[in-house]
Length: 135
Image 1 (spheres, rainbow, N blue to C red):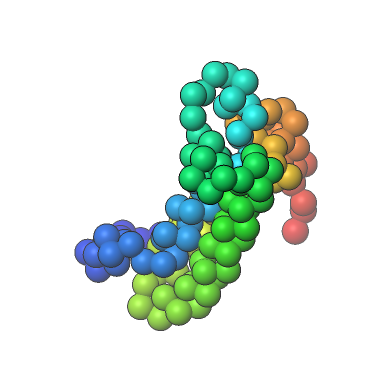
Image 2 (image 1 turned 120 degrees about the vertical axis):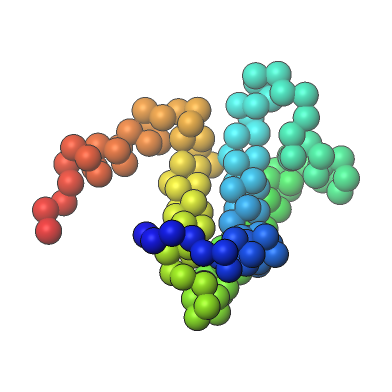
């Protein structure tokens, strides 16, 4: 990847839809997937708790809504990737996409990869670094 240009930083500072989508994915998926662990650790309030209070819904409904919003954000991100690629370098867009991809792997199936790295992340690391596919 080359150096980021001034125009790239200006684009990012305007909070483009693709960046907002990535931030939603990261925040909401983390909140939904790590809720129980955070409560067990004594965290006083979480995004799920706030959503439950503000909307009068159950924990399950709040988590489902967070997952739904994150899925919509994926759609927004994919749509914007097609549009933005004409004037924003693909390298910049791929950084945003790769962040989303990491979150998808880390929190796949509502399991926190940072909380349970041996269960969630270790198989991916082994597949990538120890037993790579020969091309």
